[in-house]
Structure formats: structure tokens, C-alpha cells
Amino acid sequence: MTVIPYFELHIRPMFRILDRDHMAFKLDLWDYDQVTASARKIAGLLRLSPPGLMPPKEAGGPWPEGWIQTFEFWIEKGCPRLLLTEGQYSARRIGSGQVILSVSVQLADGAADSWSERVPSPRTEAEYLIYLRPPQPGAEEPPRLVQLKEVLPAQTEKVFISDSSGRHEIPISS
Ligand code: HEM
Image (cartoon, rainbow, N blue to C red):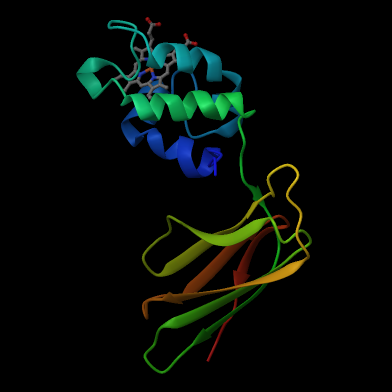
């Protein structure tokens, strides 16, 4: 099965903090719209010889061939990205002090996938996105309920979820 590359899963992680910092004068390499708008230019620079090569040789370039092909395949597939969806959420502190975060997402098309993605947050907070990977064209399955659980460390005081309707703080019950 051909794995389709998605910006959030396979493209953005290839750009280091250093790449993002050094390119901030022209474009934000972690921004989907900006990378998509410059995708063909980027693909060309990834294959250049120095001095035009990106990332430059003095800063870790070039990328391995497989990374470049992934970037080119992503363009060929129309620059796919993940979507956000919505679900039901609850958070509960258990005896050990850990927090159990429960997420359930009703998928209208069972061929889609949904999961909670952790994003950086201060040590006492936990922050998640609720991602939706749409079904591949032609794939269709009956609706299904996705149920996810995350065990968060005892130091967690606040839990936030960003979904298709915005950012929500999930109260922690005991
Ligand atoms: C994968 C990582 C990188 C990508 C995809 C990338 C992409 C690009 C693109 C698309 C341009 C052309 C911008 C324009 O003229 O519209 C550019 C120019 C440039 N980049 Fe990067 N870059 C990367 C990493 C870096 C790093 C790590 C550095 C510095 C250490 C760097 C320094 C520069 C400089 C100085 C230019 C201007 C070159 C010129 O106009 O002569 N880039 N890059």
C-alpha cells in the first residue's frame, strides 16, 4: 500500500528548528500555506548543488534522497494535510496521581482515522490536537467510534484540547 505523506506527519518534521529560524526572513517552514505556496521552489533547491542548495552544505545539507522523494511525492499528491475533528473528552485523576485523558471520536466514514496528537506545552500542562486523516479516495467503510486513552504524569495540572471548534480546557475530575 502506498503511504500518502501528510504535511503534519511527514513534511514539517523534516524541517529543523534551525531551518525554520534561518528561513524566517522569507517564509515559515512550519506553516502549511507558506510551504505549499513555495513547494516547487523548495523542491528545486533541495536538489541544487552548492551554493544554492537548501539546506546549505555548511548547515547539514543535503537531505537524503528518500527525504527529497517524499517531498516531491507530497507535491505530486496535491500537498495533503491533516484536518482537525471534534470528539467527547474527559480527564480523571487516579490514585497514583496520574491523569487519564479519554477521547472518543465518531467517524462518519470508518475508512478515516483519528488520533490525539501531543503538542509542546509547559511541564504542568498537557495539550493535544484531535487529528483527522481523511479516507483515501474511493475508500469507504461504515461509521465507527474511535476511543483513545492517554495516561498523563501526576504533575499535570491542566489539560487542553484543540479541535475543529477551538481550544478547550478539559476539567480534571477526581
Ligand atoms: C530544508 C531547509 C530549507 C529550505 C526548504 C529552504 C528554502 C529556501 C527557499 C525556498 C529559499 C528561496 C527564498 C526566495 O528567494 O523566495 C531560500 C533561500 C535562502 N536560504 Fe534557505 N532553506 C532551508 C534551510 C536554510 C538554512 C539552514 C539556511 C542557513 C543556515 C538557509 C539560508 C538561506 C539563505 C541565506 C537564502 C537566500 C539565498 C539567496 O537569495 O541568495 N536556508 N531557502
